[in-house]
Image (cartoon, rainbow, N blue to C red):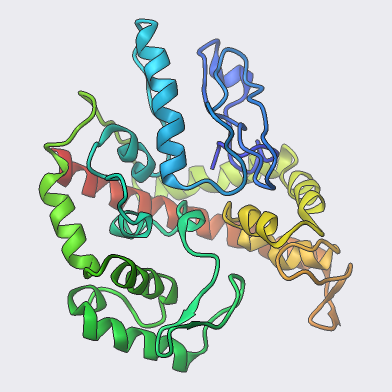
Length: 324
């Protein structure tokens, strides 16, 4: 998410002081509303090409490979840093994103529900009828969710056994994979795991920072507090003002970044964050306490950040199994 411009605090982009003179690349180089931002980090290269809007993992890989090639050509060793191993592996592995392969399949194979929303379809489908039914910001009802999961059980029982019916996003992805590729997702993932270790693009060393859950939770909550002190809320409000009234595609790209915890607060402040509606202090026809919504958003952000860290550690363990 640090590739996106306009949210240096929210995406925890390294400051000039933290860089300590080491060139950093691909920070703040993509405008999520559709324009092309420039990289303002001293000593770094902006992402090659004209990236704009919500980028896919394939977009990231192609841009990052050009930066890596440039660094290697100068006799240096590139260091790729990030929270999600999925995007890093897309750079170092030749098999993770085979040309022409369905992007939803490779994203779902890592169960990466935090960084990969941009590559999913912009509409959901009623898989019992085969027609688009609801928009990207709606939710399915219980009957639709159960019907979708029942279809997944029929076409891919191995995947269905691992996914709860209420996890509609993953169910939808696995159905899309089957419909677009003609293969069950479980077969695609098994084939990729078998070939992953033999298809490295570079000789690579993977390092994973570890801490106990208690230590990690304390550090992450302190980081959220530091982000708030640095102006996180003001940054989110400025960003929301920028995308308010923008096209559906621009809002959708902005939503792929996340920060769903702040949705009610931003709508109560009058920003057209997701639905195209909302007046200051009015959500669902009732006036809400903006201060209370802000406090709720802070607590939700801390809880979600801690949960995300645990998922990232699980992905690191999968990395160890894949590459040793």
